[in-house]
Amino acid sequence: MIKKIPNLTSQFKEIVTLIEKAKYNALKSVNTELIRLYWKIGKYISSKLKTSEWGDLVVEQLAEYIQNTHPDLKGYNKRNLYRMRQFYDTYRDIQIVSPLLSQISWSHHLLIISKSKTPQEREFYLKLAIKERYSKRELERQINSGFYERSIISNKKIFPVARELIP
Image (tube, rainbow, N blue to C red; front, side, top):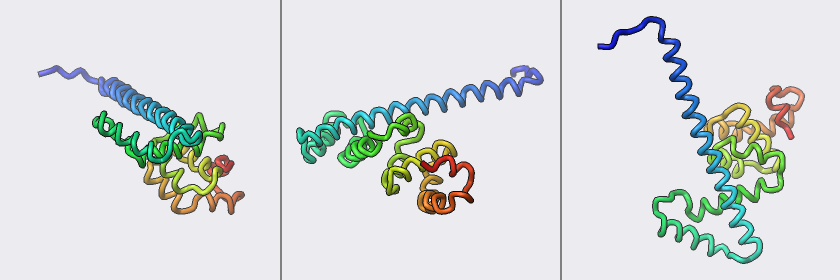
């Protein structure tokens, strides 16, 4: 039996906090790398399609190739490859958002891209999700409730957090 030394609880909590922070930072790094990868894949596909070097069928063939030659790589089906292209095409010309892109998850991006109607609305929800650290579910709730539109309409009466987010 281990002899307990009194007053070590706070020190133990510090160690647990260090562990949790390291785990969070590791997940954040993985997310950043995935977003960068999806950006690069989207850019590559977009450039090939734009120059007519590839047709839509080639993207499908790429998805099949990845699946057949590397079955351990998940998430690179035709639909997701087109989403990566859409991700790149959506944000490529918007300088202000590029440092923000890796701060939220892929599922957040897909939600914002699919449900936002304008670049300003996308930027608004991107900044909101980062600032408020919204889960995907909460972000979806805000989008579905028309938070952006309500913020624009009642610009003077909105929460301070929303006022600074309006592009």
